[in-house]
Length: 503
Image 1: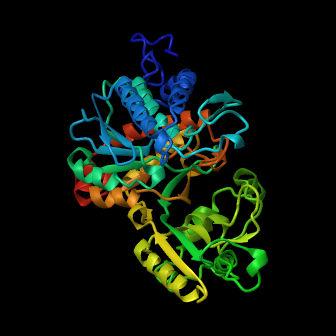
Image 2: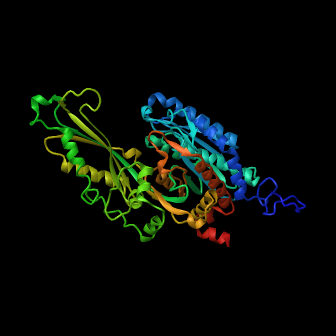
Image 3: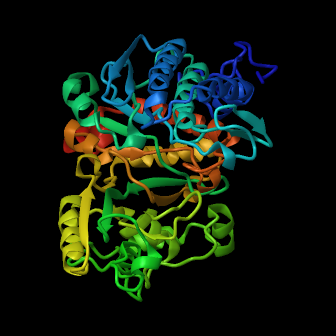
């Protein structure tokens, strides 16, 4: 409130009467007040977007990816972005927007996605996947957290930034690229980046498809793991054959597949592929200490993740296992008659889908060779087999360098979540994403900031997002643009030129 004895009507804390900072900087109160006043509107707009079933990889839903892209482009224009474009990928559209009216300020490219995972509606209890509802502070629906909610936080962060500062345009040169194929492995992203390299040129990338730690203890994500998918098929009889006729003599591919999968990990929880750990660096003590400072309780973790129990590689904590060590998971298996009435037949084929998570230091191409060698060596000679590797959509791991922009993000998180800066921890992201592709192609470092929580049920039934976390995330971004806008592109990266400019 303005001071009663201030002849100019300026608040005693330096803010203008409308809550904006008088020097063009965003006040904490101004950003928070704006977002608190607009939270219902934020939820309403996000719900409208979620109603568009922009499911990746389902041909009959293909048109909805275009509808989702058009919706987002319109929303960007309503925020004020003077330029919006729709770029056509092979399986889904990407949306590009830019607002570059800050000469001399850094240029920041925001990456996220608007496609969503397929759903099994029968497993949803709170609502149908594309009929979003707000309940008990959460918005339920497919994409509310992964990742339409994260894009919404960016849009409302820009709105809050402008409202709190009184600026006509962002303090940084801001670009957004929101792809429509991430859940399908981003098959067209490399091509789109090459075709639009000039439009995407930037000093810094903000990657928003990641998780936070906890609402009461936010943390800056500084790494993502790489990813390689594989499908292993084991062949037995030439046709499915009645078990009563050949049982005991025929090769059973389901049994052989089970034997192989059981050998993927040793008794210490380590992956048995030859040479798999040769290029995995030992975890620095500084990183272990940073993760150990995050408040972790095993029972809390089990409740939030629905994972029943804790296992994995010996010698590492849960958080080290999911963020800093490689992993190999079986994510699908099929053989015989998994649904319907059993035919009592030995199946002719059994299959398993594998997901391998790599860490910085490893190469997905090397891991692919290691898996091939392992399978060729261990499959029994009574069976045929085929190993298909998803190298075209594989992703390398990435870790954010220690640059001044990371310190700015930590400070912005503290402001956005209204905690002391020393309480902002460091974390990683168990999943992956095209961060390495972006940074190597555009020659710019990546910062990670997302508004998801592990309990948001990504890719699962009853996906949801906490609306207060979305608002805090939007506030974080509003403060980040101010912090980055007060420096130079070189200083954001910590280069010698930047240091000289700051001096």
